Length: 429
Image 1 (cartoon, one colour):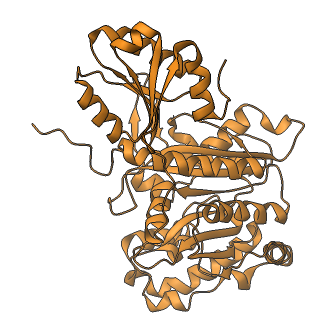
Image 2: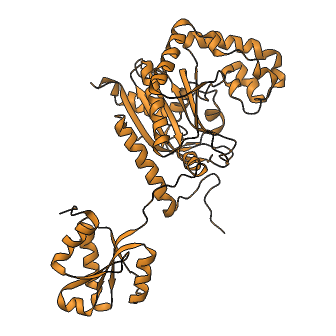
Image 3: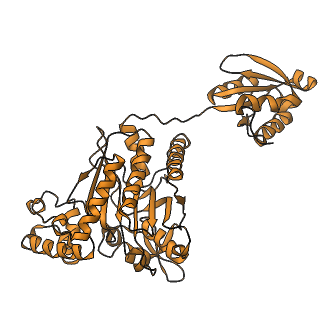
């Protein structure tokens, strides 16, 4: 039998994992500047967290969740999205009672969705997300969008498009809901089976259908913007004004609804317009979800956030020919000329690492020539050679690979010498 990774999953091999590390560290630096703190939630939750939080009428809950019964008879679901678990943790740990509010959080998490795998869309996907809980200020909406855009720009992406919309408050959404039912009902039997069901349960989701997007009724569907009450309209105008003063360009898309039930007021997506990126252009999406905390047993708490797919981010970097600055070089490679030098080499590698110098050696019993070739393949900056003469003189020969220059360094001076060369004199004591 030939064993392979399950369909819709992928291995991240060492060469690529360095790219992931750079992306994640760049995002973390942006989050630090914005004063957001990391949260980590379990890989799986009680299924009710997603049924109540995401919504029974969503494709995620109805079609895409990996749900199973554990040995105690409890229904458990692998995490398909990040917001509901974060809000559950916020409520469970009473973070709303902390003195510093709002609570600003970010996460890196693996998500699991049973959907048809395609380029940039996997069954196990990696996501970066942000959630802000405890503020209904439109400036927070703009800040969250600014954070997402800043992450992309920090990595050199320029072919970006931000689209925004307002879903309004509960009153606005109900008025729009009735208008959508009236508009689509005469065409009900022309819609896909999913949309026929959505029309009864959540007609706003009809606008998000990929299968019926070209139906003529879609082009003439009533816009939520025409049903916003005064307070919802004022809120949306303030969000746009804040984006304007931040210098963030955007387009208003009246059909942008997002795919989860908990959204209200601001909704947004960030897309790639790079040539060759692919048909699915969305990089990140999110919006405001006032009311979600109450659904998960907490007090009335406004919230807003977004999710950003890391696989799609790496695709966008490739599409824009952005070179990820990955340093694959090794600082020091220790060469043992013969068996007598092996113990010294093992000890030296260990000491170098303790003092903060990146070091390695041969573990395959290669001759000196083979060890030097290995040092070359590892792009070693320095090769430290221990042979018969070095053992006798208590020295080490240090070769700088870029110049070919060699120095003989006394063993008791070596650590200070290497710290100066590799760490600028800094390092662990």
